[in-house]
Image 1 (tube, rainbow, N blue to C red):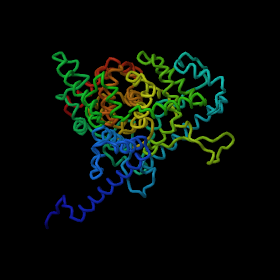
Image 2: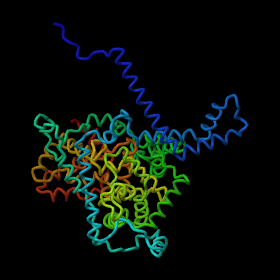
Image 3: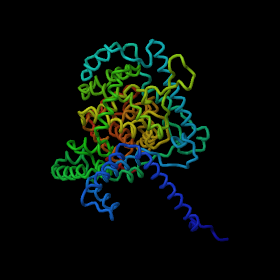
Image 4: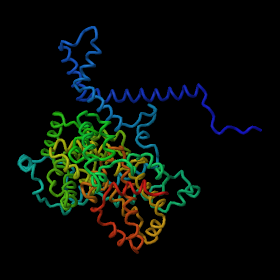
Length: 544
């Protein structure tokens, strides 16, 4: 009897169907992007430029289409359109079948969706309980005297000392971790799964996360032979040669105003003097007059209305950034950006691809009446303990509030929301936790087993770093080098890699500890660590 071939050639009909499916998906993506850009400010600017150029003598009627296109290209508008399309491709989910339910696009796993819904209910209940207990309304109009007072002290809100003793964070990262630890796939029998049986970590669900060989391939530009900012600019021999040449390339990237090129460039790190421009370019954050006007409108909203979440923002800044040696000087900026962010309904757009749903509350006296339900806070994001640390590092790059605001908002809707919502995304916090545990367990099994035996599960220590993308734990220059790579690779995966690399670096000391407290003490101060050497050594200098 002939053995069956393991791999069969696809029939021409099957290949045609595959190509048609790909073509359909591409058409859907294009239609989706065109639809989104149609309502944008860029679209109206392009229309206006195209109309104005008709008066140019070089525009001929017989070649009108080509001439207008050529004009838009040479005047830089084509590049702006390219960057806008590139941005849409990065924030939008790939279109699925039009008949698929929306929430399945956001999160395909039913048990993840259910866990996220339960978590949202718990957070909202905590917020509502606080409102009831303290007798503080969720929102109120500020009296004219208060509005005037806030307007006058807008740039020095840090000097204000409201009594926040009764307010508490709605939740802390450790509360969120307990929920993640409890996640289980009801359809998965872990007794049949060898990898689950051998996994000694806290996250007990089967998700595909990359191992070190796969990470080496994905992050090939971080290898030991490629020049890196964060390493080669500090080398003992000829650091200037690498840095000078690299800075010249960076200047050209900024001058060309190409988002894709800026993203590729930042994989090797961004020079200090160019980082602000490069990040804004990657995020397509242009700070146009319309952006400045939008920021001013949000500011007016803060001055007119007082929200309960404002107190949570004040409290969080006081507890975190105000006590940080690097960030306390930016206290006023943090209040301004975060208070405006809480009122920005444009943030709601990201719930189209976020596994979460914006929380809703009811107009006073109308509880249960769905017609009287409103998103609260207006941006749909309830701040938690440490939230302000997503903004703090950006204050080193941008000293103009509207620019700082637009870059932070884009960072949030691309990356940071994934760190506090339950999803199966490879950049989501659940995957990061599992990846961290798997890397450590594979790379340093003895250390993992030792810490587990003494009740110091590594994830309990590393979670607070990962949920903040290390903000507030690394020195700022090192943190910015890490965030360069998040932007460059369009993924938070590198955060899990760094967390495992930190444990590997301190492994010798950790093998001697006998309790969770002593393990935490060994890892209490990360401010002296150098990010890039740690990541490089962990990924590329070890044979697994």
